[in-house]
Image 1 (spheres, one colour):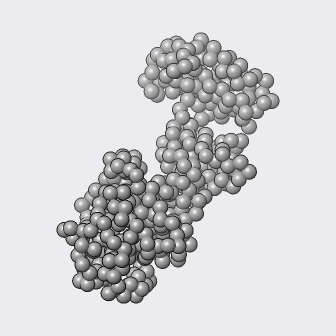
Image 2 (cartoon, rainbow, N blue to C red):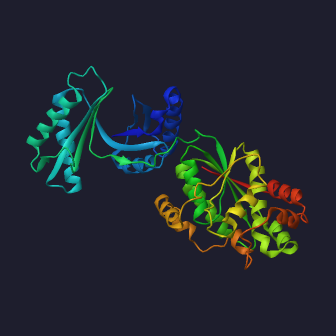
Amino acid sequence: MLLLVRYGEIYLKGLNRPHFEALQIGALRRALKGFPDVKVQKGYGRIYATDIAEADMPGVIDAARKVFGLHSVSPATEMEKDMDVIRETMIRITQEYMEQKGIEKATFKVAAKRADKRFPLSSMEIAADLGGTLLEAIPGLRVDVHEPQITVHIEVREKCYGYVDIIPCVGGMPQRSNGRAMLLLSGGIDSPVAGYMIAKRGVELCAVHYHSFPYTSEAAKQKVIDLAKIVSQYAGRIRLHVVSFTDIQMQIYEKCQHEMLVIIMRRFMMRIARELAKRDNAQAIVTGESIGQVASQTMESIGVTDSVVTDMPVFRPLIGMDKSDIIDIANEIGTFETSILPHEDCCTVFVPKHPTTRPKLERVIEEESILDIDALVKQAVESAELIRID
């Protein structure tokens, strides 16, 4: 069996299109590595996954749907460029589709695309010919070219391909086509969605998680690893750095005003993420913050947090989104149920009763000056555990 694969924004890339097509094919091959017999090859304006066993087709479709850069896929039948063969094959394909869906009566139309201009019939002529054939051969079909319940597709390219289903994919840009970024990954709902959204634009992900053992458990750490694995189904491989954050939090708690615990802690997280990003050759930092959602996500808090990272951009894909919108995406990509598992993370362990929501940079700098910032950051970076998520 064969899967016809369409890509999205690559069409807009002009002279750079071959480069992006190569990245797209590589991403699809990696996604289908669990199906060793499947071959992925480029066609004219399409990608084809061939030699798919019938039993494997649902799994291949599920894997392909998660590949960034792909617009849609269709299980298709390859046939000769001969109208008699096309008629016979498309009758069978349409009948099988209707039987599979339990459809006895339906409106339909034929959508034909003749990319090979050497074929003797035009696209409109193919559609008219095939439409008349299906109407005569299959009882229960009725023509409606404006709002059909079934659209039968035929494409004449290097070869001829027929199909009915068009299954949407996630879209975006191919993996590894737009640099690399360091994601601050917690066990919550937001940060995995932020990672998914930035990766959708072709950004390769590294990630850092701050673990406060023994105040946070090994189960909490495993939860984050599981979230990274889910995100990697879309984003590809992820280098996950697990940073021991307990010493830093204890020093902040013991030496700094409690109303500033969160903002100072966030500044340490950004410093550590910056150093790890440089080691991983990442060009940006990504967080799951949404403006005004919690005390550390007010305009003032974000400004104070970002002031420790002046040499690389900080991306916040969720900055203008409501929580309900973020939850919808988390459900869609499969992270929500893991994110809501009841395990503490480091951001919830040392939260003061009344954290400051409008911190002043000068006061924060003065408050944290009692800490040996460079030594604490260096120790955290050098002792970080690296977990490779493939």
